[in-house]
Amino acid sequence: MRKRTAIALILASVFAVNAGTATVEASWLSKTLKKLDNALGVPDGDTQVTKQSDGYLHLPQVGERWIPVAENQYYKTYLDRRTAIAGGEAQNRFVAGNFKREFTPIGSHWLGEVNNDIKPDVITVGYSYMIYRVNEYSVRNDPTPAYYDVHGNLIYKSRAIRMLELDRTFSVTYTPESEQERIKDRVFHLFGWDY
Image (cartoon, rainbow, N blue to C red; front, side, top):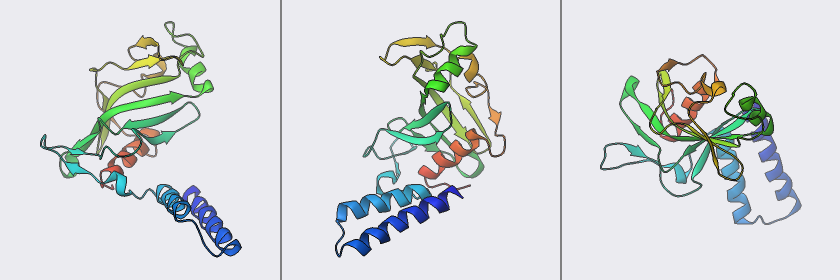
């Protein structure tokens, strides 16, 4: 429903501008169409994948380094374009790479609330290397998940207690309609796979 609303608002703004003026600036129109593609989840020219000599699919290095893949009240999740790889066939496909979580003030408090090693309201960003497969996901131990403060200082290097339910070193089957399953769908879509 949100996608339909976003599409309707974008189209309405395009028609409103066209009604007011006879010409539309090309850069504005391309930005509007790019927003529409993002709302629909359509990959644009910056997300065409290539197969490298290592045998894996890679995202192009053009565009923003961090690609947004999910958001909730506690944090926003991004995939690092530079480390993202994909491979496998059919039910053995996977996408792996560094993921960044930017914590909101509520999320920072939530993260430090139950951790003896982390004070509430200190952590602003966390990094971990995750692997999303067709039916399961996991976090690699190497590199170890790391959490930083607003100044970029390393505060904690391990899995935070609150993140244990998300950052598991063993494979976990997706809960239907969970955030992790939506992330898998989004990162698979970046490589042209829709399940």
